[in-house]
Image 1: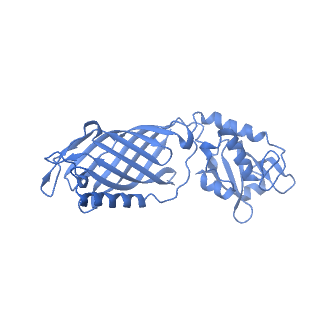
Image 2: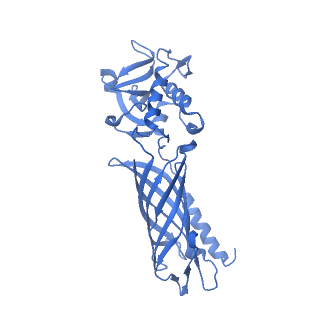
Image 3: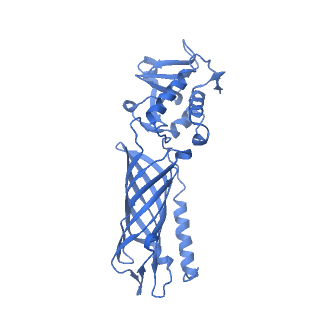
Length: 324
C-alpha cells in the first residue's frame, strides 16, 4: 500500500490483534426483534395453549409429548422459524442464559419463567398473563402440558427468575445509545485519547436480530495528534453485536506528530470503522454494554500519502442503551 512503511503495517496488525482478543467474551442474547411485539406475544400464548393436555415426555419436543424446555423450543420455533432462533437452547438452564433477564414485576405474556425444583434451575414455563404460566409438568397431581399459577404455594416457593426472548409489548424499535472509552494507537501503540458516541437507531426485524441503521455523533480527542475530531456518521448494526459506520468529520486543530504535519481528508469518508459488542449486562436496571472498536480517520502527509500510525486506532469502553 503506497505511502505505508512495513513497520507501520506491523503496528496496525498488532492493534488489530489486540482488538480481536477483546472480542472473545460471552454475553447474554438480546431479545428477538419483531415488528409487532404485542401481537407476537399474543401469538406465543395462543400457540402454547394449543398443546394443553399433551402428555409429558422426557426429551420430547413434538405434539406426541413435551418436557418443559421442549415445549418452549417447539412454540418459539413454530412461531418464528429456525433461522432467527438457530441458537435457541434446549434445556432450562441454557434457556436462562439465552434470554434477557427481567424482574418478576415486568413479566408480559410470552416471557419465560424459571424454577428451582431440584436444588438448581431445572424447570421453565411460558407466562400467559395474569399470574398464569403454561408448562410441561413431569410429576404431581397433574402432568403434561398444563396451566399453573405463580401464586400456587409450590411454584411460589420454587420460583427462581424470569426472562424474555421477545421485546416488550410497547417496544417501537427505536434506540438511543451513548458510550465512552479510551483509545490506543499511534507510534507507541499506547493510550492516546478518548472517544465517545451518541447514536439514534432503529432496529429492522429479520434473521439474526435483523439490521439497525442509525445516525451517530462520535466526538474524539487525540492527544498525540493534538486535535479534537467530531465525525457525524451513518451506522449500520449487523445483527446483535457488530456495527459499522462511515461519514464526514470536523477536525479542530492542526494534526501533527513527531514534527510531521498532516491534513485531515476523506470528505464524506473521513471516518470509517467497526464496533463489536461482545458483552451486555444490566446495571441498576439499565441496559449496559462493553465494546471494542477499530477506527480509521483519514490523514495524509505533505506528499499526499496516508499514514496508518496517525489514522488507525483501537479502543474499548462502556455504553448505555435505551430502547423505546
